[in-house]
Length: 219
Image 1: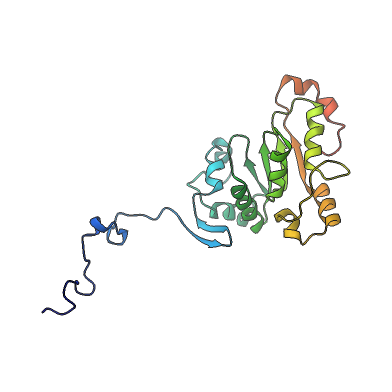
Image 2: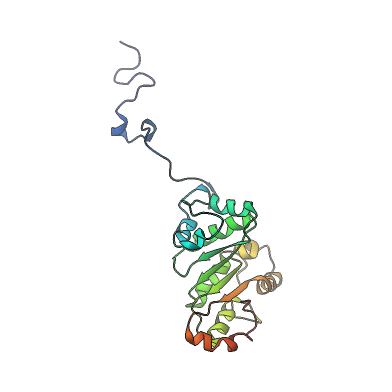
């Protein structure tokens, strides 16, 4: 009686209150905070991503630009690129702990809208420097460099032979996933990867003159 199968509600009628089912479709107060389209490992859309991590530490750095600080998702970087007012993005890995995947997402999103990238890092070892370059960053900025010897070591880690000791791997994004041959890959990387150092201590100031003649650090 009443239509429909016994024990089943009529079509279009919820079988239980929305609060019991946890179904947000019936709750007008629910807002969608995160959503994305997954494309082979790249998330595109409104997502709590790598950028939310490092922009959260930016403070006045973001406030001082023409782009006000706002709640962030990957479209924020696209807005920067499409505005035509920015040339690149500084990714802070010194005060943050981004994963390799997060670095890759950050770099590929920037490249998609014509923005270059470099990663500021604490140059504690070879892998820290190399991973940023293999993630697709245009270069690195080494923080708290104290001496000419440290400067030379950082350059060695960032460059392939004959200038440095970086290990060969053209299977990542910086080697176009193997589509760049060994010679082209190593020569292009050595020529175009940016190496910066930060002089922040009294010892580094005293050795600044010794750091200057070292080949490769652009600033």
